[in-house]
Image 1: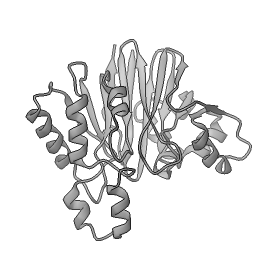
Image 2 (image 1 turned 120 degrees about the vertical axis):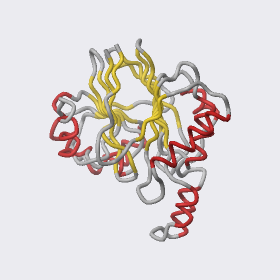
Image 3 (image 1 turned 30 degrees about the vertical axis):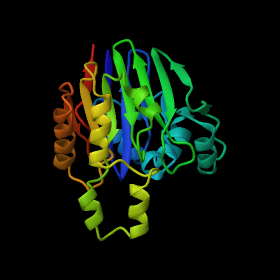
Length: 260
C-alpha cells in the first residue's frame, strides 16, 4: 500500500507525507514542528513515525519546522549540498544530513527518489519523482517556468503536485506587494501562474496520470476555483485525458490518496 497526504500547501507553508510498506517520510517541513505533528495526528500518524525529510529548497515556507524535527526528533534530512550549507547555521551540531547530487537517484526502502533541478531563486532548488511499484508521485512546486528536463522527469507520474501560485490579474491588482516583489514572482526564477501551470499540465497529463494537485496557491493573489478552472479549461482545449483535480490549502490537510 502507498498513502500520500498533502498536510498543507500555500505561500505560508508546505509539507506532505508519503508512506509505503517500508518508508514514512515528509516532503518539506514548512510549518512548525507542533503544527506538523497535529496534522499528522489528524491522519493517525505522528512525527515519531517519520523516518526522513526530503527538501526541495531552503525557503522558510518549506523548512521552518526543520530545526525542531531534525534535532529534537533526530530525523535524517535529505537534500543537496548547497541547500544543506544554507541551513546548517540553523542546526548547529546536527549530523543527520543525507546529501545527494541534484539529478541523482536515492533509494530508501521500497522507494526510488529522483531529484531534478528547477528554476527558482534558491540555492539549488529541486523537484522530486518518488517511484514505487504502485505508481510514481511527482513534486513540482516553486519554479518560474518548466524546462524540458522538468517536463520529461514528471511525465510518468500517476499523481503530481503542481504549483499554481497566482492569478495574473489578482497579482497585478494586489496592493500589499511592492513592484519589485511582483517582478520576482513573475520572473523565470519565481513562481508559476495559473496560466503557466495549465500549460505545464497540458504537456504532462497522460493516460498514466490520475490525480493532479494544484499547490502553493497564494492566499492573496489566487483562488482555488480560479486555479482549478484555468487548468481544467486548458486540459479540455488540448484534449488531454481526464484527471482528478485537487485543491490544496495551507491551513488543513488534503484527503489522503491511497493506492494498493
